[in-house]
Image 1 (cartoon, one colour):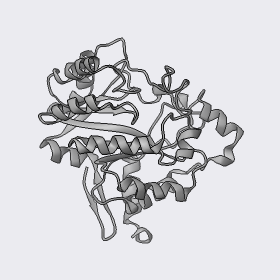
Image 2 (spheres, rainbow, N blue to C red):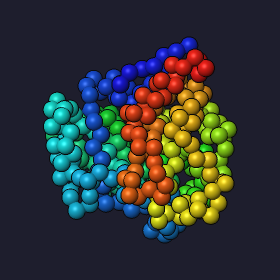
Image 3 (cartoon, rainbow, N blue to C red):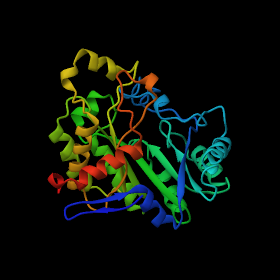
Length: 305
């Protein structure tokens, strides 16, 4: 990982930023800790977000029939064969990883931190599932270990959030991000590019809006249409409501998004790669590092300067 600097561009990549934060290299290990989601169990809604299928991002070792410790040990074995000196962050990834009482959450997080070579936590969650008492606990943890809370933002537009059955508005997102940052906790965000009804101009304007928030890191993902989801059905019925990018078109969009973003914002990734058998339409076949190289080449091209 490296830092790209041009007259009009500065892209901070997650890997090099993380090494600077920790003083050594670290790898995230995904965990499925058995959480559900308030948009599935009826507290906020049912059926989840219209695009959602958690099978798309869980690695093989990330299964709830294994304890948190077992999942982390298997993840360490997987990565350690190639990188024996690597240390690790426990990534609570699947569903809403703050959706339980404080004692339950404390036990799960501290089980992860008790595993050898685990040097911190990355906690994926929803903006409407971050009570003040949990933030206070995480702020305390953050004083002696690495903590990054990653919020699913998905879109800054309320009309989109309603359409995808997200179950909260952008004001909720803003409040959660600001409350987390106010306690000195690193804050990550995740958005999806290409949601129905959004134009290219809408997507680029998100860079301006998100840059005004105290975000530390940001992930962008292209919209993937997953078989069996309501969004795949919506696309089949109304394809004109969706912008579908080629890899090259999406790379151009990403470069422009970077150009408009706050210079110190750390970009973790730009694409997601779901298993081909789950996709309702063919993907690009590009891994994250391959797409990152495409973005770097685009940044170097004269017409992007």
